[in-house]
Length: 199
Image (tube, rainbow, N blue to C red; front, side):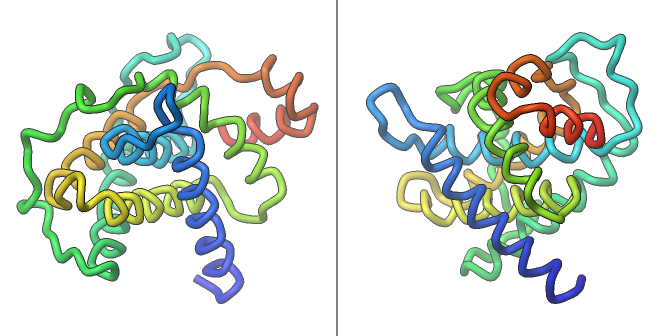
């Protein structure tokens, strides 16, 4: 990775971290650790899914579609998560995580709600960034590690990491919901072209 690419990756990580902290809050505006951690991980997986060679035209939004690509790129997201956590002082291996926390039931937002709150602002950011969609997914995985670190007092890292791994898997195997009409209204035609290059 070149110095310029790394700079864009760091900037995107910080942006996605702030975005999740601002958008995935309760009705009273409070942060909920599990919702934010799972939400960021779902975003990472969903961004990576958009890079797959899967024709989603005949598939229902929200449908689960396991694939070899999901397994390959899921491993990359896991590596990024664990490496970033290590840099933040949380030395964990995949076998250290708490399997009881690998569940969406810990979140206060459904996956579609996370999608609705994060996808448009992420697409808007990427429309003005030179980074590709897979690098954006990596940045979201790094942001997930940052959120695990932030929320460590509320949820121990070994539990939060399990939750994040579940979020990756959900995002990597879930057909995105349509955004074309919403993007056209809120972001203009440029966003539509950008979505077409990502799907």
